[in-house]
Amino acid sequence: MKSKTGNNPGPLTKRETFIFASGDMFGGGGQVIIAFFYLIFLTDVIGLRSALAGIVILLSKIWDAVSDPLMGIITDNTRTRFGRRKPYFLAGFFGVLAAFILLWFPISSESDLVLFSYVLFSYLFYSTISTMVMVPYAAMSSEISMDYEERNTVNGSRLFFSQFSSLIAAVLPLEIIKQMPTVGEGYIAIGIIFGVLYAIPFLFIFFKTHERVATGSQEKSTFRYSEIIRPFKLSSFRILIGIYLFAFLAMDIVATVFGII
View (cartoon, rainbow, N blue to C red):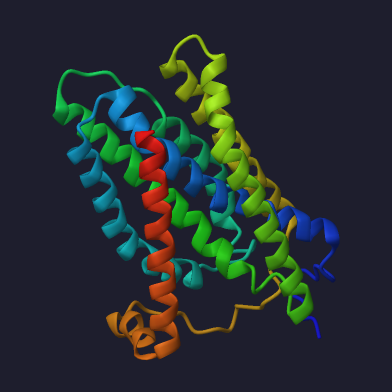
């Protein structure tokens, strides 16, 4: 049984499924391109020391641990005529584009402090934009339809776009760099091309998709540390966390070896 919001969006269509699923191009491809090429960019192109580059990544992970649940509270409490998820996709269109251009801009400086400060700012900005977009996006995947089979189709389509985008992100950047006069210009091109590629779907998601879960009468939630700790009491959740940790550890090892080669 489908639930309709006040603006009566009607049943989920194949076009809407396709448009919404395309947003995961950023979710999959964005992680791969950073895992495979960002450390190389920082150390070999910008000239940032490896230790400082590692500190930037570490600080971003700490920031993610804070910003992700915080964004969940923010989007749950959002009340607009567009819904509680979609406004962040419109902001994300501009944010993703700006974040990718800043992320891959080959700043030049003799000062480690200047390089570190710029890289830290640009990477934390990217992480914040990613959180601002992907947390509402993940939440909306269960709200775009009230039908179990339709939600499965949506999530399956998301996986296809994520994997396809990951493949492109692993192969295309090197080809882009080869076509440019200098390596620095190649990375600028990467920032622009992938920024546009990842940003455009969110503009279509904002205008062409619908939230189908009414929120007007729902009580707003508040941030509690106990809500973060509670899931760890479930053995299945702890197992899932372990799987994710080992999976991303493997990805980081592969990415590091790829960078060394």
